[in-house]
Length: 385
Image (cartoon, helix red, strand yellow):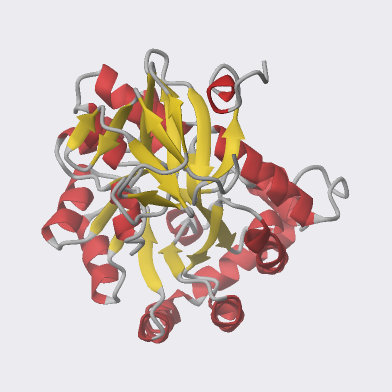
């Protein structure tokens, strides 16, 4: 059925106005405005826009397995696409660090990932994209990041600052120093010296960040910030052109983002758990307060679908609103006007859910099957059972 035309009947279809049972036609990779191809009865299933995952780093386990076990990073990205599809994700933003943390979060690893992504992305149906998560105090990598963004056509960067400033100011050893150093391939002494040096150079950071943000926004790169703790931090980044607030840590920071007209992204795992694993604000509370535009996989690709279903089950919002947080909402923040809604002419990015269990039965990206399993497979391929 890859690339073919067909018309779905009998299913509940989530459209911009809500759920209806009208047929949904797919042709030439888009939602058609008239019946096309053969009819497929999907009674008992719910058809939704494909999930747009605006921020996920679960790919790390695919491309950063045991040292030396995966010399070809592209193989890991092919495996990643299979996992994305099995979870209904049709657009995935891979959030790659460029950080003083080193290892799989260091500049060299980022360059390798981007090269593998450039080779793999054109060959798969799932729309794989890159976001650079740039540590603000690693100013020595700014030129490399800017050049990589321009060369690879990356259109999304977020700033974050995870340097343990309080401990460094107090002359104390940062938490988890030894484990962090080993992951970076450094001795604990060398890692601590690096942290102390870039902390000491912090006075030049605001100017460097502002200059980089200005150059990137002038080029059309979308800018955001990560883990804003307070309204003041959100205002600072907004002034730099960073109009997306990823995972604000407090309701006050989220409210400041809303008041400023900024997009707000929260973590799907936080919704599923009912609380942040790091003790920050509950994403369920943020959604209930109307302070969330998009839910992301964060570190677990099943989370967006599970989060949407959790919000409905817990009575936080209805299904159309919940699913909009993993489809239409993130697509809007990314400027992707061709997806997130099942309307004529939009990309045929579709996830088909079991009406009772919410399980993914099939995923299509631009009308191409990326995931199809029993019992739904027999609906599309009669006699295949």
